[in-house]
Length: 310
Image (cartoon, rainbow, N blue to C red; front, side):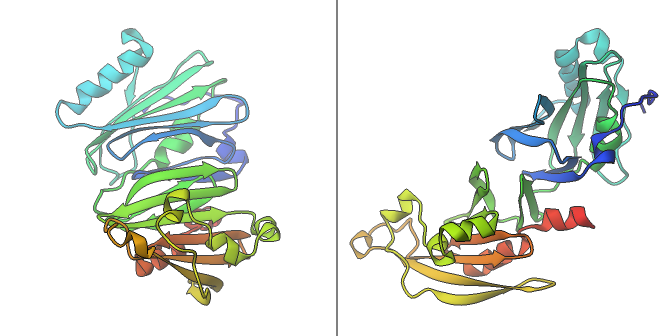
């Protein structure tokens, strides 16, 4: 393991709150001040860039390896980033036992400002991951705090999602199709063959409900859906049971317009569930054609904040 240099710099994770980032099977702990500024790709290949108020702090880049030697890939990747001579200084970094990292190599820039780089290959998913930490001063946050928390998830296991203030858990059958990450209004859309579910979180709820009633929030449809479905009628009261409390909400059904009976790729009905979580001060909503799965997903929303608070 790389030797730890004595420094007066204290890790942000030590002095402040941390947050969980979970995306396409990857999961790691980062300082609360680091937020995603670029999110791109899918499970097989993608990029996630985190930054604070002043500069980029951490970059993740991954792809699935279909052939080749992971060790050779790690060496080539380091050489491409820092040069051949500097890459020779990289050391094997011991990841937590049972994490199934066959390759784990860490390069620490001795003369900051610079970049600390870790590359690894996970046997769980057959993907390679590269993490770049942009260090302004000698900061051990990557080796001491971030890397011990990095984990991978097999595609056949439930998938955890956590980005900004949004978090949820989906079963392995549901894959992420698109997302919309607006300030205070976050949506992730999932698909399972011909079925689809959209999870949406709006906050703070106190401000959202001062603008519109809950019925109006759950009655909103995207432009594509407005052409296919009629507005919901006869909204009803519903309850969602959580482990520690019950949430009250409303439910509505959007039925496909009769003149579009031929549009078989769209479900006959789309149900919307909306709940007010006063503890987290958030509106939690789900829209789709699989109500049992919608209830399971929406019950997991907020899992990351609960885990950080433990």
